[in-house]
Amino acid sequence: MTTNATRPTDATRVLVLNSGSSSVKYQLLDMHDGARLAVGLVERIGEETSRLVHTPLRDGGSRERTAPMADHEAALKAVADELAADGLGLDSPELAAIGHRVVHGGLKFSAPTVITDEVMAEIERLVPVAPLHNPANITGIRTAQALRPDLPQVAVFDTAFHTTMPEYAARYAIDVETADAHRIRRYGFHGTSHAYVSRRVAGLLGKDPAEVNVIVLHLGNGASASAVAGGRCVDTSMGLTPLEGLVMGTRSGDIDPAVVFHLERVAGMSTDEIDVLLNKKSGLVGLCGDNDMREIQRRIDGGDERARLAFDVYIHRLKKYIGAYYAVLGRVDAVAFTAGVGENAAPVREAAITGLEELGLAVDADLNAVRSGEPRLISPEYARVAVAVVPTDEELEIAQQTYSLVTFPVDQ
Image (cartoon, rainbow, N blue to C red; front, side, top):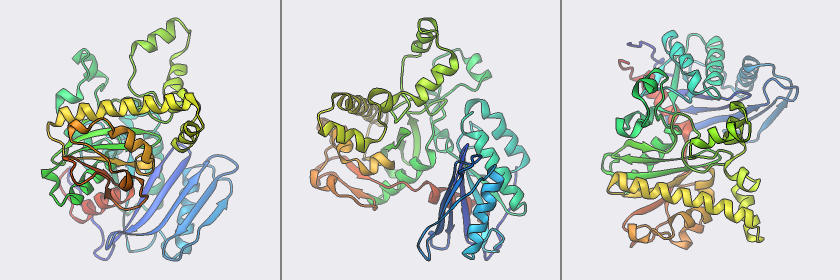
């Protein structure tokens, strides 16, 4: 389809919305210079103790509102009120578009997309493969459309960056007809982060992204790895859902699928119970009872063996993916750490790289210990492969993709 949804010539602001099942994160950015004008979070939507924290960045200082917000419509109206109080209201002629994070775009959406009825229908058709995420994204979109029906609304998909994976990397080795009938394949997630970080790494190295091969390690409570060759994803660790791959805060990551059958037959667990086990009671929290890497490190320092085991399992899986993606890429220019754990946990970075010296990887202890909000190299000058820490900025990536689309519309 061709879209004619374009911005007014004087409009340079983009509102980015990330709608969860009971929360909305938002940022308002001015794309003239990429400056953030306001950020905020609404949580516990639908509860008596709903909470909104709003920070106008031009003036500083946060405002907090605690009041019942029955649904996303009430939450976004409260957000609109807070923005209006700062002279940044949704009715401003300077607002060019609203960009929405949408977790699952399947194979159809490989780029940011202006939201139409047909696009919404496709996002709804993908609910069975993203039951925890797409319904909340849909609710946020519909609410924003009701508030500003005249404004371009753009979906930016977590899966889009990974649609460049070759078929042999995306396919599971199961019956093709069954897989196709039920859309079973590897889609990957955290795509906006992997796209942003891989591009910033190329900048750190003073090269064009098309010249650089990067292994990106997005390590937060959810965690994923990607192999990026010349700016295009060729493999990633998450699959049909965000459960596959690395050990995460509460998710198991890679596991023998027969474990599911075993738990059904031997433990008498239902499908829903196994789902909860693997997604919410596994990973670090399943291994040691904590999913906060800072607390796990504190426990390790105190001699806690369960915490040490959890850390070792986490690092072992991480090393396996670094090695695997090194093999997939053939030549690696950089390994980049990002997201909460990747950006802040120096012991994780050190442990993940230690022992990989034969692959040209090394970490400088002093550089690794530095805490900074800026992209930086932590490898010694002699290292053949750069090791980088790059703070991710998914909101900026969504805003940039949204603004580019409504400024320079293309056939979709």
